[in-house]
Image (tube, rainbow, N blue to C red; front, side, top):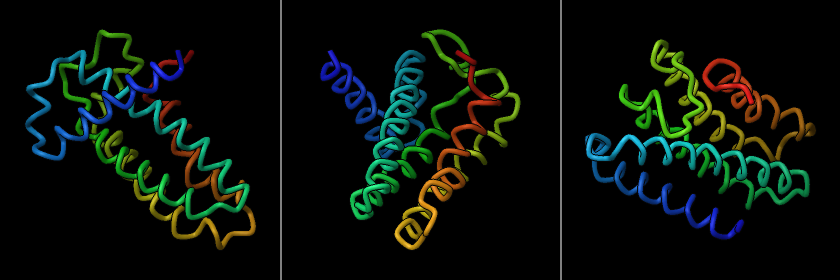
Length: 153
């Protein structure tokens, strides 16, 4: 079941990233369902990747962690394009209306998260406080976004 779920996630991420690579207007050609499921898959992947980054960093496996950090950075950039106006409802989206009401703030947060992942990849092996560095440059972005832009569970 987990393997099937991971294949579905990879399918949506691949679809979204391929379409974004060729042209940003391609989003208008995607269905609302595809966009919502695609962005949910990317957020889910980033969460799983962040957990992996944390494990690798705590073990001192910084080179492996760095490549994952850069992957997350790219994902945050891609997410900016996955919140067109017509995707604010349906298909079990957990996105709150505040995303569209404060689109610039949301985009800035995604950009900050992306930039922080690049910065994290540059400093992770030089820090004495791995947990604190991960919290300030990675997990704090998740918390900031979830507290304002995502439904509570």
